[in-house]
Length: 139
Image (tube, rainbow, N blue to C red):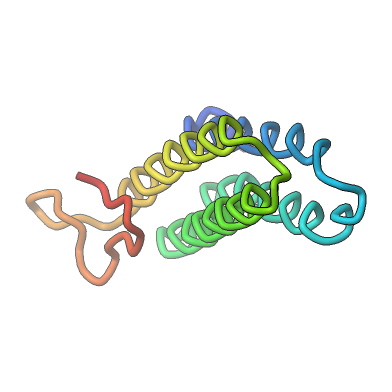
């Protein structure tokens, strides 16, 4: 068994890229945000990769899907908080565009990964109700 197999996942590696990008951008934030928005962003960003790692190592497909859904929620939390940071002038528009690009990539990868764990019928379609609940549904 590959205990650290999550490291091979494109979704995990792209999410790690997002974590690094967020941490670099946080250095530009004002000091008064250190224990507020910065702290929230750090926790949400790290939660994305943590939940991918925890989820894919679970035995039950329901657990796998659950942790990927939590990861997706943390991803959207990062996006929302970066929009707040942008509106407050803490990051530039090019930074915001880069974050948005990575977030969309991670969202699609998470959705595809979630889809891959869903039980399928004889035609390969997900058995309801285990259908992605986000807006980046698998084609």
